[in-house]
Amino acid sequence: MTERPGRQDRTPTVGQVLRAERVTPHLIRVVLGGPGLAEFTAGPYTDQYVKLLFPLDDAPDQRPSRRTYTVRRWDAGNRELTIDVVEHGDRGLAGPWAARVTPGERIAFLGPGGAYAPDPAVDWHLLAGDESALPAIAATLEQLPASARAQVLIEVSGPDEEQKLDAPGDASITWLHRGDAVVGSALVPAVTQLDFPPGVLQAFVHGEAGFVKELRRHLLVERGIPREQVSISGYWRLGHDEDGWQASKREWNRQVEAEQDFTATIRGSHPA
Picture 1 (cartoon, rainbow, N blue to C red):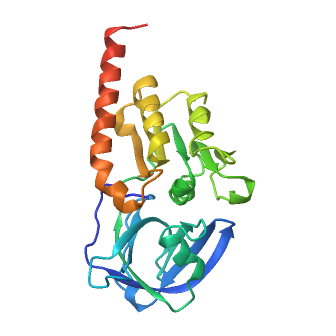
Picture 2 (cartoon, rainbow, N blue to C red; picture 1 turned 90 degrees about the horizontal axis):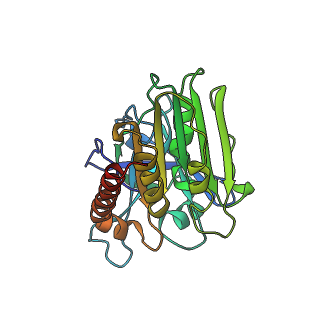
Picture 3 (cartoon, rainbow, N blue to C red; picture 1 turned 30 degrees about the vertical axis):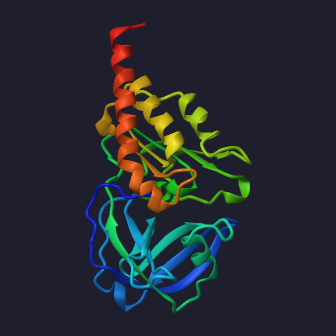
């Protein structure tokens, strides 16, 4: 996932791995603690994130590679920080690390940052994303008041990747299975075909940049939802590692906004 606006501490924190467990076939939950977290504080955001720092094996004197992960849970009483890492074999940095890490190992990270928290004053919430957005969606559900209405759409590869989520009584959770299809192939039609309840909504839509672009256009242009009511961003992009995606993300976002502003202008000048 990728960096969003919000405060981010530039001084690394060093965490010690307390435990790691495989929650689903492709998701590993890592809990960090130790004396290095004595001064760590988390903010009010449910999409808050940290950047894990991975030194380069062949160039340890160079800047470490960074991989961004949402804080799944911060237990202030026990000083424990939980992150969920999606793992696909030997690909990437964080996945293989989470698969092999053992208690006692240390890892440095930056953060936290973040920008989104559910607004209790809105009439209903839309939470949609892929595996990379699942920790933030889960954290959001846990923070919603019991009376909050929420439509939750989560795309994963298959039923084995589903998790039990704690949610308020009026939350409707739909798991979407894409199988071998491209990421977003199940989520995009589910959101575009969703019967939106009346009233003011707050939307949180994050995940792979390609489908996020489609849903951004749908929500802001086709549905006409005010920009300030939507938290939407590409956490990652197919074919790019985080270093490459971060380097191109600003230009990508600029192009997306220009395209959608143009589309909105054309629609406005040619009313149905």
